[in-house]
Image 1 (cartoon, helix red, strand yellow):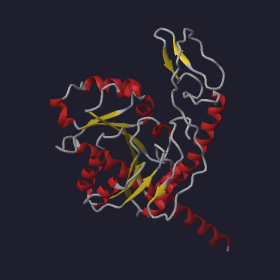
Image 2 (cartoon, rainbow, N blue to C red; image 1 turned 45 degrees about the horizontal axis):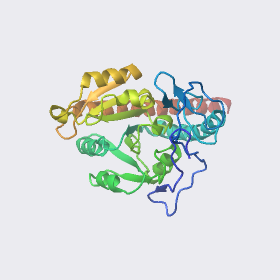
Image 3 (cartoon, rainbow, N blue to C red; image 1 turned 90 degrees about the horizontal axis):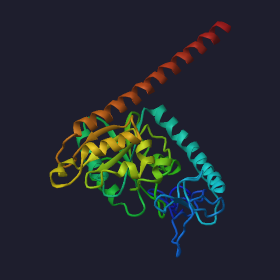
Image 4 (cartoon, one colour; image 1 turned 120 degrees about the vertical axis):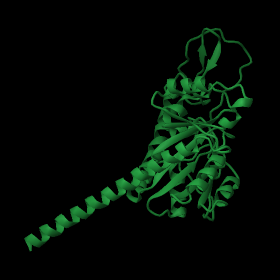
Length: 319
């Protein structure tokens, strides 16, 4: 169970594998517990299961300790050690994925959002519009079902479903196994649709070039302030379903301001996969990233060829 997100290990299933995919890390369960009595003090308690209080309101706050989380029976120090171990192992796998992407000119983006933001609809529309311009593949993350992967495959693009069971995020190990099944050609665009969750995917590097956070205008404009880690980790925010703005009480300028308070470098695009508004800018961003990945691969190939030529020349001179 995860000290960051509280997700359970569950039964991870990756399409193409005949059995459940084991994970070697455990995540201790995290959730706020109820108290049947009032607390009047405001100091933090330095023991296992500690609770923090906001003195001015008496509100409970579980994110002020070193682990920025709470798990009954675990001290903050123990939680920090567990989290460092989990993320350290994940980062090793992520580095392996990143190396693979670089060697093969693959531009990988990690799409993150809350459930219902329109990620899959945006993906389907993007794939349809990119068919003549790029090789696109998808790693699809959900706790259960292959519904979204089936929607992606209906476009003709290859997709691998990863079911995380009780887990509420993809990790780099899962993505690495999905890559084995996809067997992508060089110079491909890989879209990773993470499990719908604005919390724990922020902490898990998958080896991607960018995290893209998708926020629907049907959600509150204060989401960036409520879930700052995700918006801080992202490089691009897509404000999605903007065709619905005439029917909603949603302040776009305020939402963008909140997001850029959290992350001043965050790029923002307003998009509607339904009407097509903003899709050209989004696709141009993807193709520019893919072009950069392709150019870097060719540069590495050229450097390797030069090095081989130099070694051959040295051998010939020595012979």
